[in-house]
Amino acid sequence: MTFAELRVDVVILCCAVTAGIHAALVRSHFEEGTGPGVGFILASLAPAACAVLLTRRPSRLALAATAVVFAGLIVSYLLVLVSGLPVLHPEREAVEALAVWTKVIEAIGLVVAVGCLRRPAAFRAEEIVTT
Amino acid sequence: MSTARPIPLPLTLLVAVFSALVALAVSGGMHMGHDHEHAHGITVHVTHRSARP
Image (tube, rainbow over the protein chains, first blue to last red):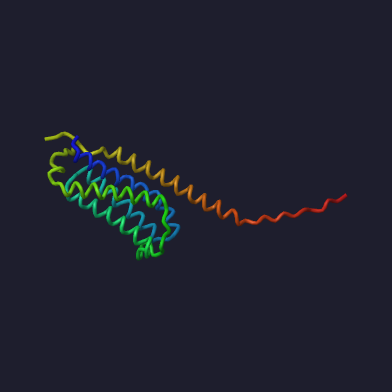
């Protein structure tokens, strides 16, 4: 296993953690309203899909999509804190430790994914065999 | 060609499930904390029946 492959594994694990946490909170957010509930379903499905994609067909495109998902989740949370997210979470939310930890995981995933993308030589998808 | 593969999907799923369980435990604990705070506002009225001889 190369360092580049290890970094892809880190990105996959970050996807798994954030997907799991968001999935666990879907029910409680549906109690707040349909918008937050649907938002959390999307926030769990998107990183889960990225994890599957990076596992089955690791590529630069998959890494780029994962980076976009992580960035989107972080920006969405910042919007929820500052002004609320239209449709999905119109009301502002107070800062919670679990949410901050989730964003830290997503930030790690984002940084590692972008790092892989910025070093094309370090991540060569054709070297990772998926059967 | 290298034979290395990304982390297996079942292991990824296990990490996701464990994360979900931790999130449930933490968020449940937070709610219980809120309930505990609310409990301070509960007023209990106790009435004593007069003892009859």
